[in-house]
Image (cartoon, rainbow, N blue to C red):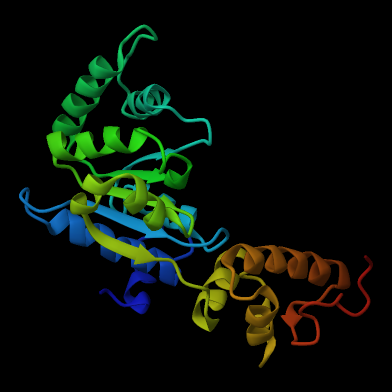
Length: 247
C-alpha cells in the first residue's frame, strides 16, 4: 500500500489527502491492476463523516484515477441509476428507453473511454436489484468499479446478493482521522493559522477523529480567530471561544 506521506505529495486535486484517500487510491490501483479474469470491484465502507465522499472525489479527479463518478439517492431504481450514468457519460438518451437499451449504451461508452466507475452512497441500493445492474456492468465491461457506502454496506451486500461476493476483489474500511490527518485538514482549510503544541491533538480529541467534525471545528476556530485578530491557535482555544471573541 502506498504511504500516506507519498499520497500527500501528489498533484493538487482540491481534496485534502487523508488516510482514507490513500486507502481508496490503493484499493482502486489494486482493481485496476487486476486481469480481466479476476474480480474488479472494490468496496469502501465506514460510518458517516469519515471522508469517504472526499475520497470518491479524489478518485474522480483527472489528476488521480479519472473515474466516472455518480452519487446515489435513497429512492434510486435500476432505471434512474442508469439515467444518472448515461448523463455522466455524456450519452444522449431518451426517457422511453428500456433499461436494457440504457445498459447497452452504458457498456458501449465505457468500452470506448476505458475509465473506472465510482459509485458513492451505494448503501442506499445495497438491498435492491440495482446491485444486479452493477454486477452485470462489471461482467460485461470488465471495468474497475469502486463502491462506497456506510458501515453496514458489506453485510447488506453479502446477505442479499450471494453472487456479488465473487466479483469483489477488495473490501476496504474507512478509518478515523489521526494527528497527521488533522494537520493536513488544517493546511487545506486554514492555511493562515498556526498551531501551538497540543492544539492539534486537542482538535483530534474534541472531534473524535471524525473528518467532518474536524472540518467543522476548523471553520469555527478560523472565524473566532478572525474576530479576535489572532492567527495562533492554542489547546485552550479548541472547543472554547477564543479569548476576546464574541459568540
